[in-house]
Image (cartoon, rainbow, N blue to C red; front, side):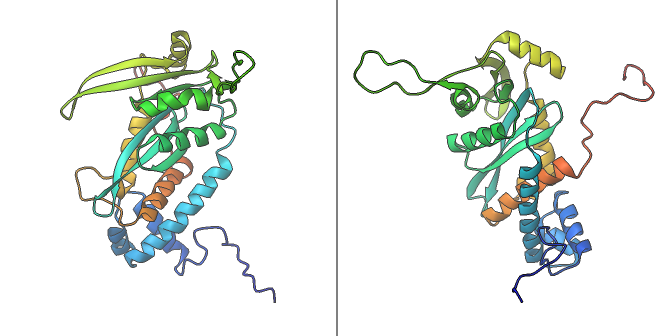
Amino acid sequence: MCGAEFSELKGTPYWNARCSQDTVDAVVEHVTHGNSFVTTGQLVGCHRTTVARIVRAAGTHARHLHDLNARDLQVTSIQADERYGFVGRKKESVWDATVIDPSSKFLIQGEVGERSATLAQSLLVHARERLTDPHGLVLFTDGFLSYQTLFPEVFGRPYQPARRGTRGRFPKTAYRIPRSSAHVRIIKEYAGKRVVKVRTEIAAGTRARVNEELQVLGYQKPNTSAVERQNATARRMNSHLARKSLAFARLRIHRVSLAHLVQGIYNWCRVQRGLRRQLDVPKGRQL
């Protein structure tokens, strides 16, 4: 005997679940419809710790599935944004940062952590690795300055500047932004908690490239509507992100696992009703 275990369920959330497959399916379904671990346990008929264990296994599986399939993506524009949540009785603020393709509404990359330059860099670098051509896209973001700082390094072409003279150190590596790339910032100005003005700023690239991409997307002006709408969808699917409530994750691992699970369900399991498609029979001005 080799001591190894063999099962057709190995590598899936059903492996060593210690409950039926129907129970696992029911837990994932209820949790990704915005129910808490306690409420899900009451609906399914199990303890909240069992729900947490299933979410951790399913979240890991969803992350591996995304890493395996989200490759060589052909996109011409992406939108990036963050949404906040809490861990441990709302004492620790943790953010979900996402990158989405506004054309297909596909979530390219998601990261969880503190809102910092490190989080923004991890988000953009991992998103770039999933793209076929990272030098031919337009990035739409909010006013978070880290995106503007990181855009040339992540999506530009590196080159070594010439050294002046024959002594001293060589200059640091610089980056050229291709003509096919651009970065647009949508900056919101607040008065208290209300948005009083929204202005756009082309931080990198040309206006001609931005206008070309807006025409492809069918937008009248630059915006981050796709990722903002996905933020609302994620808050409805994830009980840890519910607004104006006592919602929070008790442990960070639950926060991260549920974020990966929600992303996997959104990308691979549910129909995206926000996509444009031609109607079989036109209805008025709708084609």
